[in-house]
Structure formats: structure tokens, C-alpha cells
Image: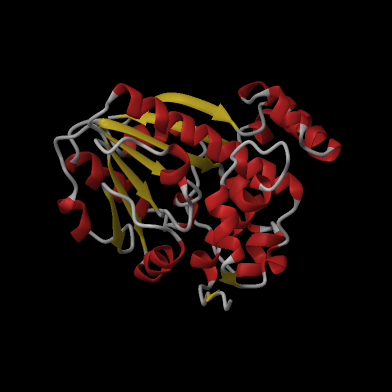
Length: 276
């Protein structure tokens, strides 16, 4: 069977990095994500994933990040059975299938039109899940979101690729339209952004990173409705299940320990939850 051809480049191509990582981790016997949809999607795409240099440590690290964001989303849904989930820059992530929300939940996937078209080919349709083919920074699609439902906004691996002024503009637009909810995402300091830019997987795509955040409180000042609730440092071994950290190579565990001991390095990456 001929696979689906992919012609994504630069920032759009980076979605294949996270897809490859989640698929690879899901094939491991001790998988955390157990994401069969990601694994099946990779097998159906006509693309040389080896050029992305996604190694075991990256697979496990991406899975740990996704698992935390999944957990926050499940928690929000449990507290708000009439909620909406807004998945920004969804790429080919299969979060909606991993979480498997009840039909009372309205789920919205937003990404470029060509990415959404590829999603339609790779994943089955799902009741109460709407696909929006648009750049996240376009204005027109926001007005179609239900404003009166509690909403969790999920952005994984998205904000660093947006222009520096576009992230607060997007979040002000969304929080002005939506009555209440939460925002969960991964954020990186300027040093973190520089290190990510040098990762072989990112360099293979030619993608450029722009938006950095040295202090989460700065986002509160830029988007007044946002209030910080949870901050997990990416290199704090105490922030994750010890069994998951133990799955990493000795070199990765050594790096985590070193970064955790040095404040400037320990804060290069964060998982953040805000309320509004």
C-alpha cells in the first residue's frame, strides 16, 4: 500500500518530530503513552523519518511531556463535564484518542489547512470533534468557538515557533472571547530556545524558533486574565514519576541532575498551567 506523501517544510515539518517520538515510545514494551494511533499514522506516511534523528531519550522525553499535558486535560474534563478542549497547533497528535473524552465534551483541533487535510486521511472521524484548517494566529476562527463553556487550551510544541508578539496577541484574543478556563503548554527560556534550535531533529527541518519566556509571570502582565497555577521545570527529576526518569539513558539522567543543580539551566524548559 502506498503511504500518504508529506510535503511539509520548516515549522510545519516539526510536527513529524513529535509524531515520530510518540510513535516510537508507544512501540516500547514499557510505553507510557501507549499511543497506537501515532504508531499507525507513522506506518501510513511516505516520509523518511530517519532524517529527524529521533532517539530513545527524545521519545521518552516527548512522551513524558505529552502525558503531563494529557493528565491536566483529563483533570479539567473531570471537573467540567460540559467543557470545550481547544487543541492549538494540533499537528498529527492523537490526544483526543488517547484521552477519549465523553460526547458531552466539544473538542476543537486547529492547524494549517494542509495539516488538517492530512489528519483527515490518517485518523477516523470522531463525534463532537471539529477540525479547523487555519493558522492559529488568524482571527476568523476564534468567533466560532462556544464562548460560554469552560475551555482548556492545549498548546504542545507550538508557541516557540510563533513570532514573539503573536503569542500574547493570540492569548489575549482567546481569553477575551472565552468566559473561563485553563491554558496548558510547554515554554522555554531564551537559553532553552537556543539549545532546541541546535537539536539535530529541528535543524533537519530548517525551522526557526522565536518566542521565549524567561519568567512565566511576564505572561500574566502581557495577558492580564491569565493567572499562573502550576509550574513544572523540565529538568526537575522530582516533577515526574521516578520510573519514567529511570527509563532514560545514564547520560540523559546525568544531564537532568546537572541542570537541576544549576538555576540558569534548570529553568530552560517548563510545563505550565494558567487559569483565566
